[in-house]
Structures are given as structure tokens and as C-alpha cells.
Image 1: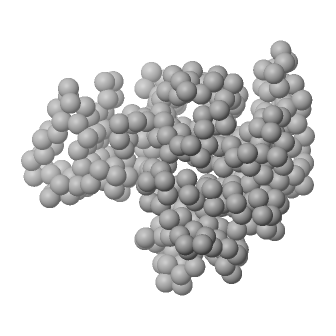
Image 2: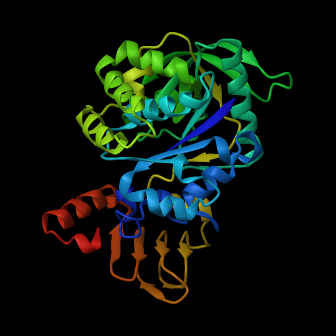
Length: 361
């Protein structure tokens, strides 16, 4: 059967001050009436019903996610004791699902992306699951056709076509090579050459296949995960999880498996996608006015252009003479930044930590 694994352990520091330790990006409402993680579960629809959804997150977020996803049983939300990147997260989830469904197929996805129509996404996932059914050792990933020379994404170079749906709405290609995040010139070359995709970090594979790959390429990581799985559901679980998971060296699934695996195919995404990586994503998601401004909440802009404002309807933000800025108001902290210094928001979080101002984290 097809199961969904949702990775929800990110800190979302680039969305400070709205994103905090207890409410990171995936628990925020940034693009509609639902939070990011709620939208992730919603778009699965009947393709993966709630009883086959597993969320892997940080232990401190378990209660908040349970509150936001009451349709999931408590056992469907697993809390990691510490951050160890995507390979341990995925391996732990695969072991958990395999306990009850040895032949499980997993659709693995982040919890904090915005994707267009749910129907298109479901069709893509089901097409990928069909590719895995045809060749159980196959690993499927999804590629987003690039629309600009992005430097913040990894790229996938495609090779020969492997398969296509009868109506050609879904097409899969052999993966020629995974490419690191490029500089601007290299990204422009990728766009000019064609045949390159942004790496969306969404995968479909058999649970047994990804576990076999981890066993082969990351044996020490796999051994520790297996020790955790051996005591799943017992009163030893929490202690073993804390000990073994903490001892794992963090590594991404791209480095751990994807760059070594043989039969890897990429499905060209036929849905709109945004990784909502920073405050500037709000302009893409909500649009702009005739001055290029995006306002979420009550805002009065005078001589203001290209500025993003996020507040609420109970707190008015007035901007005067601003250009290309970001203004985010919360009850206890306000950010005012230039768009081009957006990456420095992470430095703000680090400075708050160094000053021990944890009430703002």
C-alpha cells in the first residue's frame, strides 16, 4: 500500500519573528486559511488516507502537530530527540511503516512547501508509485521545471525517457546526475541547456528499498535505527531512541543514498510548487499591488514600493518612504529588514541565542 511520510522537523529560522521554536514555519499559516503542515496532509486526499500518514518531527513539536492534525492518531507522529537531517528521519519512518506493512511504498515529502492543485499532485504521486510497482528497486524523485536561475536549489540533470502516462501528462526520465546548488552563472547555463530540474526533495520508493540502500551505504546509521525499531512500542523505546538517535551523525538523504543509487528516475512535476524558503515567497503566493507591495494584515503604505508586510488586522503597520523592505510584526517582536539582507535573519536568531534572549526564540 501507499503510505506518506511527512518530514516536519525544520526550525524555519528565516521566518523569524513569526517562526519560533514552538511554532516553526510548518506550523504557520503563510499562504491560505490552513497551516503549512495541514495543507500538506490535505493535498494527499484519498491517495493516502489519514491512517497511512506518518509525521516525523522534533519532540518539542509533537503536541503542536497533534493539535493541528487531530485526524491522525498520536502514534502517527514520531518525535526525534534531536536534529539529524533527512536520512535518519527517512530511515526511522521506513522502519516504522515496515513493521505493519512489509511491502509498503512510501511517498516522502517536506511539510512546508506550497503545491498547486491537489489533484495534480496526487496524480504525480500515483504515477511514481506505479513506476515503483513495476521495478521495486527503483527510486523516484520529482523535478520542478526551473523558471529562473535559482542558486538556492540543488538541480537534477535528466537523461533518457523511462516512462510516460497514456495521456503524456506524466513523464519520467533516468537521472543523469544530481548537481549541487550552483552559482548564478552555472544556474543560467542549466536553464539555457534544458534538461535540468530543481530538486524538490519529494521521493517515492519501497520502504525495503530505501532501508536496503541505507544498510549498504550508511551501515552505522542503519544499525542504530534498527536498534530503535527493535524496541518500538515497548517501554524501552524512549530511552533507546534518545541514546541511539542522538549518536547518529546527521546526513541528508541526497548524500546518504541518492548520489550512490543506480536506478533513480525523475518525474517532471506538472504542478505549481514553491518551497516558501523566505519572506519574499509571500509576494509570489499572495501577489502584489500596483506599487509592488504585498501586505498580509492591516497596512497603510505611503511612498512605499516593493515591500512585504505581515501583521494582523488588529495591529496597523504604516510604512513611509520604504523600498524593498520586509516588515513583520508579532506581539513581542518586530522585524524590519532590507530584502537583500534576508539571509541575515539567521544571524539575528544566533545573536538572540548568544544573548540568551530565549523568550524571543
